Length: 114
Length: 111
Image (cartoon, rainbow over all chains, first blue to last red; front, top):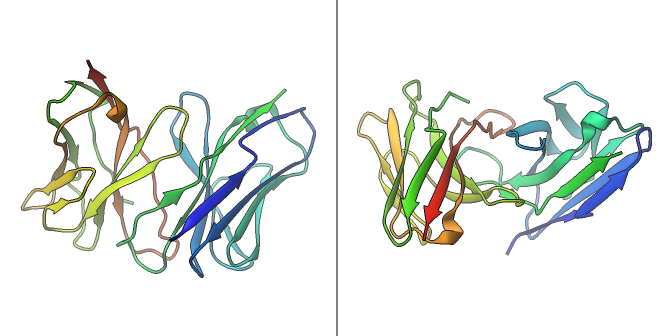
């Protein structure tokens, strides 16, 4: 069966510090991978998606970046965090191709920038 | 993804059925109707999806109108654990297979 792992679960970081969040998927190959963010009391915003190794598409311009160094690994990074980067970060995957498959989300990372 | 319209909130009594509506009048022929729910402090969870025919699984049923311009998620017996935000989303087969979340319906279940 397929599983998705996301860590850490919670993170408190000072403004200006770097960030690295990791997501890995097991039990499948060539998944589509996604990073979402949910600010407090707000909806889910798609940040990045990837359809293959090294292929990253950005949906929202910001000081975050994403990388996919391996087929089932997706990393969200920042060189210098802002207060506005606080939120609940979620990784997700789905099979390719086509819309006839559901998404599976990780358990999320709650980031607080102080 | 095409736009969907859902009520902001709904209330239900425990152990009663719940019908969560979704309007999607601009749906195209190849759009799939997906439902997810998000419990407090958790990531979204897949509930069900369909294209034209009604669908059933262990969590819920999805009733799709004949013209596909609306659908209804049916929880047969609401429990307190079903209190969540429910999202109705149309998915198209674009390159990224992206899932675009709207505001959803906040379901409150009363004991």
